[in-house]
Amino acid sequence: MAVQLADSDSKLIFTIRELMPVINKCTKILGRKIPTVLAEIKPSDSMPVDCIKLSKLCDIRNSSISDFLNPDDVALLPYSSGTTGLSKGVQLTHKNVVSNLYQMSSPDFLVNLETKSNFQDVIPVFLPLFHIYGMVGIFLNFFAKGCKLIMVPTFVGPQFIKILQLYQPTLLFAVPQMIVTILNNPKIKYDNLKSIRTIISAAAPLGALAVDEFNKKCKNQINLIQMYGMTETSPLTLMQTTKLKNGTKIGGSGFVIPNTEAKIISLTDDSTALGPNQSGELVVKGPQNMKGYHNNPTATKKTIQNNWLRTGDVSYYDEDQHFFITDRLKELIKVKGFQVAPAEIEEILKSHPSVEDAAVVGIPHPVQGEAPKAFVVLRQEVKPEHLREFVAGKVANYKRLVGGVVVLKKIPRNCAGKVLRSELRKL
Image (cartoon, rainbow, N blue to C red; front, side):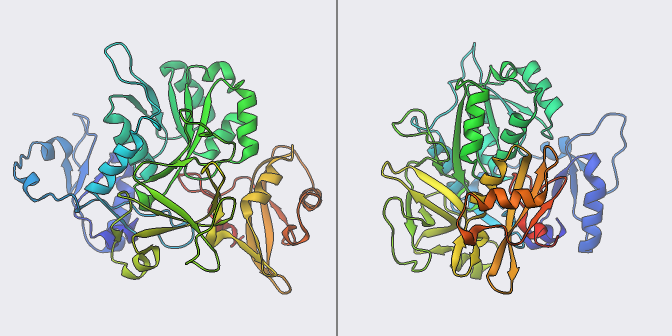
């Protein structure tokens, strides 16, 4: 956090009393105090030193603020997840964000029902608002539509069941790990979920196996759709929909949303655009594409080329122009010149009855260059060697788990459910 505060040259911090120790630690590292606004102050509480009441800040009136706002000014500076290195400040303009909100509101992709005097969609918000999915994809999007948003700090099974009982939510925005929790927790039954009309999964690909299991558990009565985006695209670019033919496919991420172009380019020759069912890097163009990275022109130049934004995601589209995200380009494992997608092996491991969760990384190997190594969380005891043999029976020789299998209590993930592979490589 101190690195991000320094890079952004932040002038003001909004927080709550419980997080003041974190702020104090950050400002100590920075060597400078940053004025801090406390969002919640009880009448009986004393104001900490150097803090400002939110109510006092709101009393300040400045009618001239709109005079200097420009659509191309930066509105948000979220930091990219940093799963493959230091996070970068993503410059999202007012035009970027507003454009994406309108794109999400296109009739073909709309998931909420109109708010009326006798109806209001209810959405529990588990995703943190500092993440672009939570901020734009959920909060700004549905707050503007008059939906009821239930703010929930963390997602845990017992609390989720209480939320379901108390609020009867109609829409649920999730990350894949939340879907896995719903599947693995025997106390979360279909009867608990019946009020939900649609579940939207994003932030990381949800495997076909998990989709199949979910549909069985929920008797095909709840729409489970996926969408794809990234911080650099404000965030949405692809989305599944029940309103268009071929709009939902197991393991897919959907169609390109309005006013957006997408193409697949070769992994070896980025000037070559590929046709249907050919795997390559997804690049996108649209009004939601970021202005650039803050204080980082080199990274900006690498990512945005001729107005096309390189996503770094390996993808393909089929004959119906439905897109499928298969892996991160930087996460592909190079084995004797062959490319191995961790997601493929992870899906196989998760299909084993003893495996609850799995992640695969590449590690250096003296002969192969790199070798796949798996980390698993178990439901019940099983020998790592058995899992290696299980995978070996389902893949080509170069995809075998030569790097071994390690049992963990928990797979390290960021707030959006993405596997922190850099941490796994250190184990």
